Image 1 (cartoon, rainbow, N blue to C red):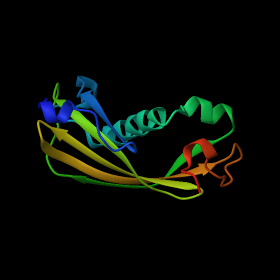
Image 2 (spheres, rainbow, N blue to C red):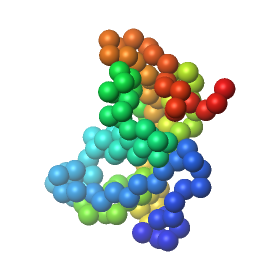
Image 3 (tube, helix red, strand yellow):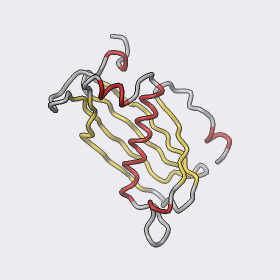
Length: 139
């Protein structure tokens, strides 16, 4: 990866995460299958949450769950087996009950994919619930 790609993001609401495309994630042509991209995005959201001082496990233990309510992906170029990729996950917007994220997946500076998602916060019964105050900016 290029030096600029491996540097830490300066935005506290963004996290960079290196990925290597595994054989199991590819089709017979060695191209990463589209079904794995949402999994990578969840990995990015998990690391972003961790960088904010909480883990999904802590949220779930407290009865707070995040569900994907929207996902849009724009594929620009394929990822291949054993490629070293960089996923940048950015928290674009947060309301009292939802978080919007942007994703940018690159290989050596080439944009392979851009995506957007919305996750909603719910309680154990699936009812909409406020995002925990440690994750929300001061009002």
